[in-house]
Length: 81
View 1 (cartoon, one colour):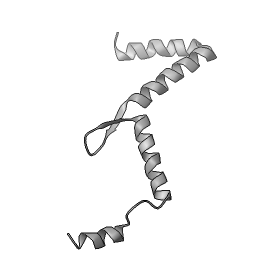
View 2 (cartoon, rainbow, N blue to C red):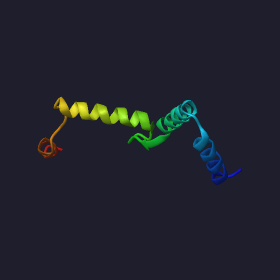
View 3 (spheres, helix red, strand yellow):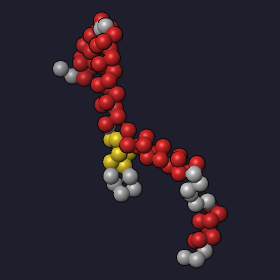
View 4 (cartoon, rainbow, N blue to C red):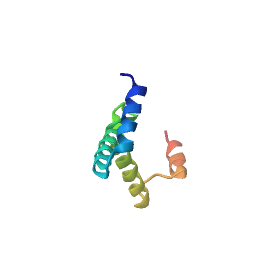
């Protein structure tokens, strides 16, 4: 059974499903998507969608706390290289 046939079969089940089954299917799909590798770090380490979101939130919080280097500071620092 190919992907198209599976998709059609699943759609038939989903169209007839009650709320409980739909919640189960939704939870499985969300878990699948969150655990999928979506990006790699500069070191080549794969990150899942969930880990990527956490990395982004950490970066946003660092910026809010002022924990960053400005373009101007980088330019001044690079003059001494």
